[in-house]
Length: 574
Image 1 (spheres, rainbow, N blue to C red):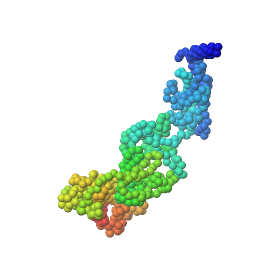
Image 2: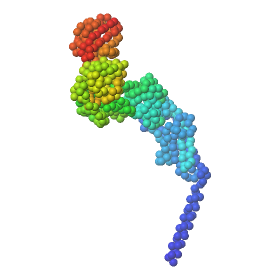
Image 3: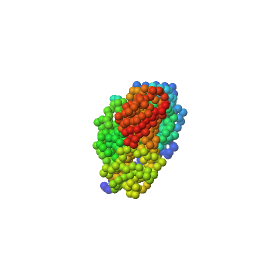
Image 4: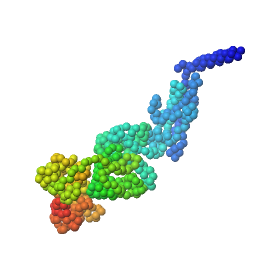
């Protein structure tokens, strides 16, 4: 009896399940056999005119509508889409937002700030009225429809100033890929607070264009421009010249400026030539410069752009390695100092001017270069004729004098006076520099044991230091300037042109009653023992200022120096 009861319950349960299943299948109507009505917009309307008040950015515009219905009773959700007037498909709206409660409510509120931002991103000017289209879109399963309305909105009185700025375009290093646009660094003001000045160190391609963006995607604020003036949604800025630049924009004044970086050099106690030297770093891309540099001494240094003493990077006091431009330190509210160094030897020096933080690093260069056996003597030959014996000190040979050399001649080094010994060469031309007009120009290149000849890029008088233990050859030459002044701080420094041998000249306008002197800052300071004469002798470190110009006019001025640069002659011809 018990078994029969259980069996009966089972049959009843199966019958119930079958009945319920049949009812559900009957309620699932085939696709297209049910309808979805459109909502009805109640606010805002075309007659609605809203003035966005920037003093109350969190106030809202509320969109409302009467509910749509699914004839089959399925759930309906809603989205509000905003786009430019005349839009009908809303496939790329300026803004899409779902109503509250997972899109089921029949209203949505959008802040003044959000509305103003999307209008700004779409090119509508501040403090102007824009008529825009909006749509209420309904969704239910696979069905959707929309109803379109419009409204008038007056933007904030003042344009929103973005806090982040990116650069992108065909002229830039990101190859016009906005998703990888390069971030500019936002500078601080004199109180250490964020300013509206942004800058970036990067390279540009000549003839191509670039813009500044507030986002790494569209829509975004876009700044183009011309002749240093930014224009919101203006044409792309044309890069006139190829090279590396510091690009700085000021969103308070809507201006931009470019400073071309021919090279960054390391200048100071650690490098060859000290404060008169200049070890260049090579551009690596992405705002980074790097070079392998022999740090000869401990002591302070700076990074200098283009050999210009007015453009120095120094360390922010109290930081391990943060850098700032000397001329910007006060306006950015920081104190600075020369960069300290306690290392000696060969190091990779990296200068990182990417957007996050300007800094420098040292990394030991363990590149192995086998030394060359040091000869007992070393001679310099010009076109096969011996012209100079170098002085020996351990593994190092050097010259105290400057040897006048010419680009049209070929040179070799040999361990024997008659050229029959071991020959030595170098891996690149001498007197080749990215800063040929610096005060003291030098470079260190690799010394090779072979019989190849080497040449100069241009005529120069060079001083040598050759270390066989490294092995390297270092060369140095100096440029001279005619200093001319009445008040020293207002002096004019006129760069002179070198010609072979040891001659410097210039044609320049000079003023009667002004002092003159021949200087290569600050190692050589040449004055005269007869300072009122138009011709005479020069003395380094002991001569008087020349006071020999009695008539204003154009003068051709020439000096010819002895090989040690301690003496020479001068001539002024009007």
